[in-house]
Amino acid sequence: MTTQTNPTYAALVLRLGLGIMFISHALLKILVFTPSGTAGFFSSLGVPGWLAYPIMVAELIGGIMLVLGVKTRLVSFALIPVLFGSIVLVHGAKGWQFANEGGGWEYPLFLIVASIVMGLLGDGALSLRSLKSKTN
Image (cartoon, rainbow, N blue to C red; front, top):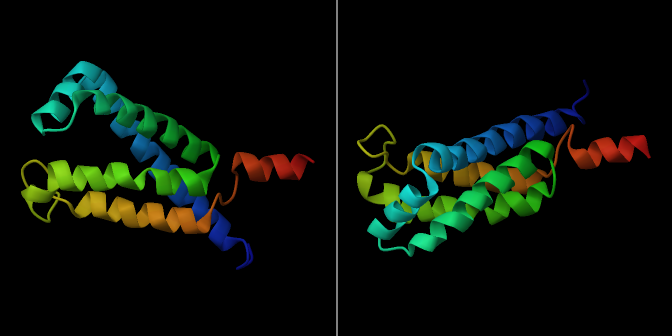
């Protein structure tokens, strides 16, 4: 491996990690909390309950797109408001440490930073785009 290819594999690892994280959070809302339960939670925060549905879709589809390496830059930046919303509406009042009861805001902030880095890096190795260009 040359130093010229290391960043592409680093981007791959970050892309997979972020994608899996977004997929798992979407599935938690869909399968464990249920869509209606998630909408109820959003309402309890003073946010329109219907907003839970596009958030779940964004997390699920965005996570899948990240895993596949499709529109990585766009998806990474587009999901930042979801993470920012989790800080402002849910975790911000719980303190810095995510280990605090209800989870603090350190983890969502780290995910924002990781998403910015992912957006700046781009697809990385083994993305659908990179695999497609190798077959042409």
